Length: 118
Image (cartoon, rainbow, N blue to C red; front, top):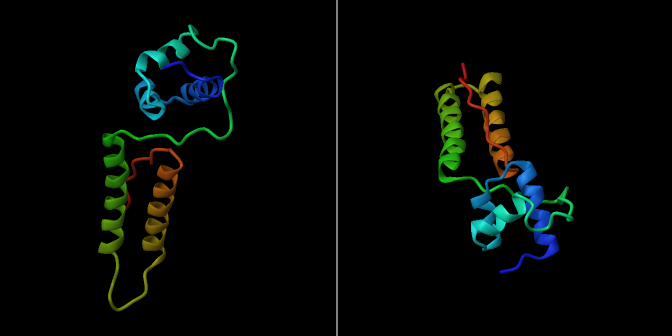
């Protein structure tokens, strides 16, 4: 399958962003060799990399587990600090905000930072 100019520009942008070649190939439904040809300049060397609106990052199963593990750990700590007789304290609300931020970052294509909540 021959890649169109727009696809080559997107592939170059995704490579510049750090996406893995096999993830890009899967997204475009092509053999990884097509992406490698773009990466090494055999195809589309005169086409500029796309910037701005690139397809979202696709996480590997390991990375999805990492995102969820951080969220579950933070939520577990927050739940352990809740008291049925009083409203949640600032520490619990901060942890919950951190979980929300990590999950939002994951949806934007960023991996969360491992944290040790205290």
